Picture 1: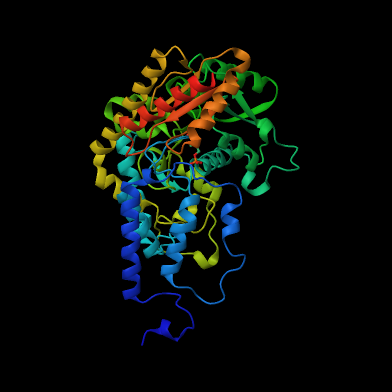
Picture 2 (picture 1 turned 60 degrees about the vertical axis):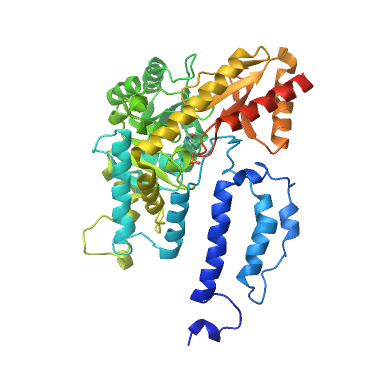
Length: 480
Ligand SMILES: *Cc1c(COP(=O)(O)O)cnc(C)c1O
């Protein structure tokens, strides 16, 4: 007899029921992935709408899966922002590709908890294999060992924790608080660096004052000479320079810091160099774009996000480190109940979390299903579309481009008098996004409000970009 049958409510379905519901789910996913443009990109909901539509208490008696799936379609989907919509152009556009979704489904089914090699030989070894495939695809040397985290923010946190440990200050044992023997510590990043660097220094007890923002040039790239000066000045004033974060593909404009010039500055000053290539690192999969990682082979660590521009469903962040020993020195801590004698690599030693998901599975599915050439072809197409859009902006007297377009993101704005230009662009953005046909976000570049069109979805075609452009022009002429 099925043991589940002795329980009062449906709960865990029989294999037959699972098959039936599972088929419905797979059908739904297949329709969704191929027609996600049936939904408005931004949901037509206001804050609290979904909360009000749901009961305040969990049900006492189990409910049928069919009813839950009905409510998923009726209530949850209409409140979802459709990152999988081909006209999602906000932030960094991402895709859950079908192979990645299949990998994610199987990951849930296997339910691996990969803290130790023994608790999942498959997850432990596939992580190493998938990451070394990816490392070769982007042209990083074999000296980089990889580990998968959830996000780039967490990867950068780990990089700076390793840097702190490698500095020989005995922070692991003694901490930072109440120590008269420590100088103040400094971390450097450009003024365009991601806020995750700020969060990392906050969490590591270095404090936000420890983060010195280095000025950028006219193309929003860190000035290596300014970094060198800042390090020298800090030393004179008694700071201890610890690490620098260079960005390949900054979040606002996707500018690329000159890592090849930054690396020697860091080497000379004994700084840990971390490269944040969360978005743009993926572009190095195309051989002709490999130059964007020039100098990164000399970094101590680097992060790139397969969940950003490599079509792996969120979340999956690839962290590479040439000094994994420093990361282990920071985080390896083996309680008696987890001691093993196998001498294998245990993933719990390279991070703060104990339990880890089997994220490598979906990455492996995607790398195999697309192949290096398939990935590179999509990335090239996204860059082509972004350059095309930029050319429309440049040719239109009502608009201007606000930053170079090294990858698939265009920063631009509608032109107007200085005192009304930000307001005009805010209204245009609001109107375009309200249509549900496209979604763009905005940023500030040297204090100016910029609209930002980011291309990264697998199913984005020229017609989607053209439609966004038509809407932008239409609202500009209506509102200007
Ligand atoms: C997106 C991005 C991040 C943050 O990524 P998460 O994975 O969401 O933490 C960090 N740095 C850069 C340059 C990014 O583009």
